Figure: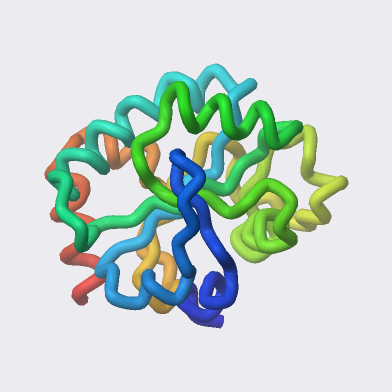
Length: 165
């Protein structure tokens, strides 16, 4: 199923609580799924790196060159929202109670170890933090986004080249 299709009927949210239709992502050249949680120290260390990259790439433009969708492994909506307000850029998130949150974890096999059986991830490919780089159609380009993002803007160029290939 296409990424645009997966999120098409979902009202995604930004940090400020504003709603964005998932179908609006079809024109974004690059989508990154960010699997993370407030309680996870490696996630706390990586989030500012991703925020800098996201803000640098998008440069305040209305038309995003890269969109991030946060897939939370937080234990409550309050924890998720405080994490977003504290540390996140103005990217999107799947609302806490929405079934798509766990659906994405199952689809890509990415979740925190402690939620694996509850979420129903049979084969865990990766833990958190994970940054999965996708084409707008949902095709995976890289599962190594956390490592690659350490390079800053060159990582975006590399992902964009892979998406365009």
